[in-house]
Image (cartoon, rainbow, N blue to C red):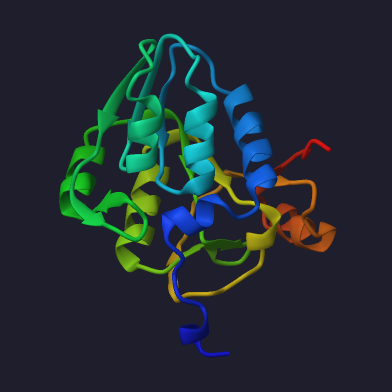
Length: 200
């Protein structure tokens, strides 16, 4: 099938998709964060849901290129927010490019949380734009612990031609609707997998 049949959805469109699954994943991700940590939040709807879960945290440092995360945490007094600025991708409401990359080269993080348009065990994170995948690879290199937040509908898909390859170990966080065969592929490839239970 031609890639033209899979146009990149806007952040607004993606925020309403798989809502319960994304919030279950976000709750799981928030549960591993320890007060006092320095974390990096990627752009995207699932990572934005994680930002919402962090609003009540104290003594947390968050760095992000995502406008939705900035908005979620703008009035959180217990969270210090560093914004990574660069070229704005309006469709994803995030910043990419050399200015973001230059800033990241001078930072490190306890935990990095990445979003994905799709993810496979063989090739990693699939995105619509090469600037996004380059940035995700750099983000992953700057973190002590790396998590990819992807609901079950994104596993094993290849909608675009841009890929971010991640060095092991990293953790896939998905929901309990995931196909067991897909989950096993990730585990066989050496990826840690955590499955968040969707309430109801």
